Image (tube, rainbow, N blue to C red):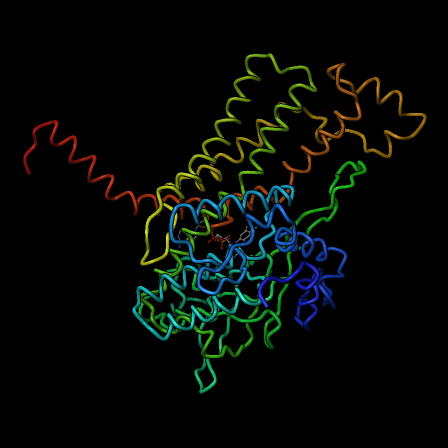
Length: 477
Ligand SMILES: Cc1cc2nc3c(=O)[nH]c(=O)nc-3n(C[C@H](O)[C@H](O)[C@H](O)COP(=O)(O)OP(=O)(O)OC[C@H]3O[C@@H](n4cnc5c(N)ncnc54)[C@H](O)[C@@H]3O)c2cc1C
């Protein structure tokens, strides 16, 4: 068996996993009124593979076996592979109305990071294990997520530091036996974990020798005994002003995953004590995941440009010079993100036999998106005006004694109906006043993480440029 259908994916989730949501233990995530919405979003990845047109992007033939596999689980070898995966992420996110379905991509970023690290270690056992695991994912078409971020405790101290309140803030190995390792700890903010099949866990930071027990990476089914998940709550309505909308609601949730002395069989252990390689793994994960993140922020950035242009027209201000300036800023924001994201793929670098996106361009793209996000939201909110948050609801609009007055008084540009103007306010309110602000800032790493990587990767650029000016100034050293 290779590819599975969206229905088969959903059925696979009814497996006894221990998931909690708003104080309740969830019996079946697929039928839960809120979590079911997330499952439907994740299922888009499987629906794409079933669609005659979209499958060209979502599916590819494994060159070794001739079997059809998800493009996400193919090992990228060149710019074309990276670009196709990039375009697949953008398309999937468009279908998710700005939310990435996430069934395979973040898991694939962790898979590739583990693969690169195993190759760099030269440890044939680990190389064989991760290649077998990749085959397993390709054959079963499993949905995966990446459990990277540990709860961490006091950020000022290392995982093993005696000043930490307890030793379990980062996931660690507490026992090794003939069957495998036993792990304890908690990962946090893990998107899609409640409705994926497997969790890939890797360290979230560099480790020292004293932290060797925390240098651990593994893959584990989400329904394994000892794993408990607590999901982030969210509001599952699509329309704050209650405008009728036939498009499905799209949203994800993120889990606090508690590993309560969980046994991981040896064949799924990919790092166990090799502390020097924890940094290699998390670094490569962050690199690939930031490229994924930049791709899935493109549709959201297009939405900002779209609502900015629309509401300027609906309010009748499109031709005002200050409005044009703001629209230019929106276009620059979007096009810079698109250019940097694609450049990162074309200007790829090889890590052994795996192509990875250009580190500086990738981190610049993610930093650009996160750093300027609030300014872009501010522009849209500014162009829209206060009705974004004060407009009457659809139910008030439809009351016979109010309808004509609301129609009359809340009109802007006479070429646009009041209902359409109100619908646009509704959309703006939805996409600019939500959890997205924090998601965009911290998802794929906080802005300082990107700046530090740019500094590290840019060391060569600093040297080259310094040499250039020293030559110009005829300085001999
Ligand atoms: C919606 C969402 C989805 C996410 N999905 C996933 C996922 O699927 N998988 C996953 O593994 N992670 C996921 N993350 C986690 C994300 O990568 C982290 O939020 C990010 O790395 C920041 O970590 P933190 O939230 O623990 O914040 P912190 O690390 O506590 O950062 C807060 C601030 O403290 C600063 N800081 C941190 N440590 C230090 C230090 N030692 N010294 C000085 N300053 C410091 C940071 O620069 C930042 O300004 C997700 C996050 C969000 C918000």
